[in-house]
Figure 1 (spheres, rainbow, N blue to C red):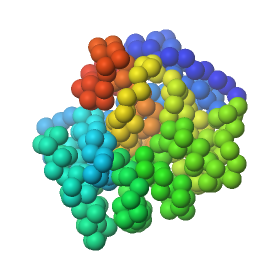
Figure 2: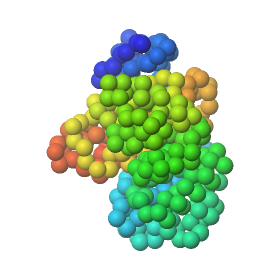
Figure 3: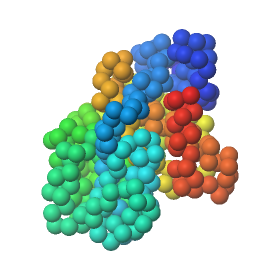
Figure 4: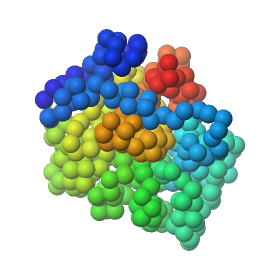
Length: 336
């Protein structure tokens, strides 16, 4: 195994420059048979899949993202995911939530399109009618564990799979998957984003053994393979990303502040980048799994937002402060 993992530094010059190699060298760990040379362009691949801004496009062309979640107790999570999708560059962001959460979420931002349907008897059909107009769906932020909502989330996942839509599953969506892994097993356009506890729950559900704390890379590979080589982002001090064939490590500097909402910013950002990478095709991703490219981009961006907000606010930093940093963080990482 070749292992190269340090903090990310700013990109200086093009892909062939010495400055570029320093970025790659300090950004990744490569697992198993994959060499550093194979990974040296991964950061540039993120840049490659970002669509150009041009006056010739129409509204919606750069991304229509659906967020499935939001109930009476949890209204912030779907908001953070949806607004982050817009801030990253999606044109439209839809939230499919319960009726009593809708007015609250609408009050957070007029930019969001909010559908109060998730607790209605026809929730799956209501959301299904929108799926042809969505490029990706993020399932789980603020979903809660009410049996009815989980059953509706299950139906929405099934309908999204039929239409071949990229699916990001986070938060209580992962609780659902841990109870019914077959729901997502073998669907190659799914991305799971578990934290340590969620990862442990998924691992034990699939492998029937506890996580080996001395072999995080191996456990991640085994879980991905057991689920049919799905892309998994194991969030933590360093974010481990795998599709069952390789493991990338994003150790971009963030901060030691762990306020709620950071995972929602990641999932919303990933919803957009997953669409862009999938749409860009193999030429832009140089044959790499597009969802690995998208996941690394989303992890790097979230950590950069965390770092910038922490520099300004320190211990008082919140997820709202991170949202305000998305534009400048995106520019520094991908457009400077």
